[in-house]
Image (cartoon, rainbow, N blue to C red):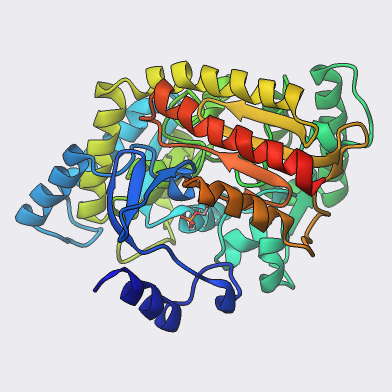
Length: 441
Ligand code: PLP
């Protein structure tokens, strides 16, 4: 097939996620390499969101591809109850990367399934049923994970799962109260959360599930002391702390896992995306030794045909090795500094930039009509004039590919990006912000 045929066949037969189908217009992709991909007309696009913040190692990594091919040659599949070298090796590597309280891994196929199974395990282990998660979070689109999700992408699933409770996240930039320090913000949010725990009945709460750093809802980085404070509340009330590292894991934020920024040990960690960088699907749930040993004597009532698919695990082993061999963390921290400095300049120079938030190569630009009042460029949940779509279009015209969410533009390039490549791409963003200042405010 050629480009136009691929486009028209996709439009006729594929249902595309999160879209009114009449609006879809996919770019047919012919080839891809590193941070770039090309359409059938030879246009080169820069992947400034690592696709869905999953292609941490970019396109065309030979080591990952070869690891999959080698596994194909050995065998493609053997059921989860059998021993497979790639499955065992990857689980061991993951536990070796985790804090010393963590014990075992249950593999899934993706992020949503990881969160679903984490919640099931938390309920089985604690014998309690309520699950706390936050507004402005995304945990997946399946029934359970979708109900953990604290933003409009869960609406199609409502009425929700009984016992799933939402609390507000620390979105300091948009809080009605002004805080004199990060610590006072933390005190405020933790006090409100503790009150909510008490009113819900601490004896009935199995787990608090959080994106360690909120991703698609705008890179919301917790204020100082917040995560240790959550850990302390969990300990006080016998609640499990579940960190969703689906987006933030695997070097994205400048640490192997984002919870390492906060000096905490979660009870359960969920992951997906960067464990295989999109080469094949894989996700997983890492549980503490204590939870793992509970299931020595108690039935682990979880199961998936493709739990720990050998091909996916082979890709996972190759990715984990590559992160280390290629010192990907070193690159994220070096190039991430350029990203942060450039975003700060943009905030200083552009009336439309209300806030910038960044950590490692994980960042968002929050667009406003007015810096003083912080009025968002588009009202929450609405974009009647398609302004954010226009901005994505202006970026696309420059072959800068990323996605927007509400009034925010996400920038999360593959972690192999060089400083030179990043600077070249950010010039395009600079041009678009100037147009927004002049024409869209
Ligand atoms: N959790 C987080 C934090 C995510 O960002 C996502 C997807 O973007 C998910 C879970 C769901 O992952 P998946 O789409 O692989 O089911």
